[in-house]
Image (cartoon, rainbow over all chains, first blue to last red; front, top):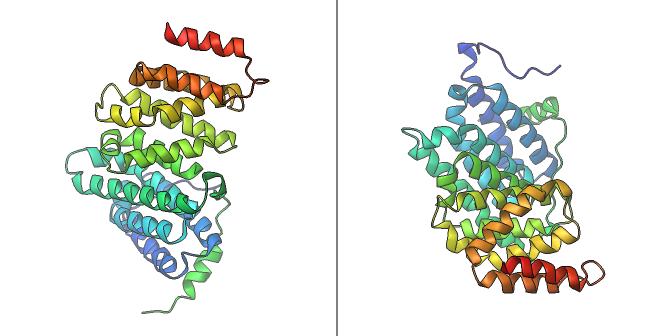
Length: 153
Length: 140
């Protein structure tokens, strides 16, 4: 049975979200164009959005949104687009609240960018020809194995 | 297109004011109409949800009205052709909302839009008599 989260969430685990994402981000920097990685990444990030509380995810939002937008621009893979929607669904309320201007700019900028990118892609193909990725079970162990292959800097 | 329309829906639901202020909003609506033309029930369903959501925001977002008007002919065309052909039945509530909003925004032009849209439907799918009934009801 999958663990959705912990309640209460251990304080010592708060920094884990950022730590994990730094590994995933490094993987995307090198392998964003690999389709199955985009699929696994979407699945893992979605589960991470559910697993970690907002205070753990806050430092991750900006790098995630920027990376997803740039990966979508680079590849057109649906998973990157999907995560943008998921992050907004999770943090949109914070963007309209007090002090949410920066977050609002980030969310709005990401959607604006992917909308422009999609427009460019639709110049060369029709909507029917745009593939949609199907969600699949995450293969976290495989992903972490790949992450371990990254050179230590 | 499925994921784009889902993302658009998430934005409209969670941060509607922000979404309606995005410079590429007309493009986003165009993409939604492109998605509506995909022969996949799930994509059609979420596209209709997006259009219905936009329709619900028209009264509170005056800036949205000219954009909706800009795409009114295309919206009505896709919706009417979809209704008589291959739209999923559980989207009928959203279809009604979108048609009402498009006709309201289009005003007198909407009659011509509807007539042109229905002209594109094959006669064996929609008999001439039924077309005339719809156009008459629209005028009323």
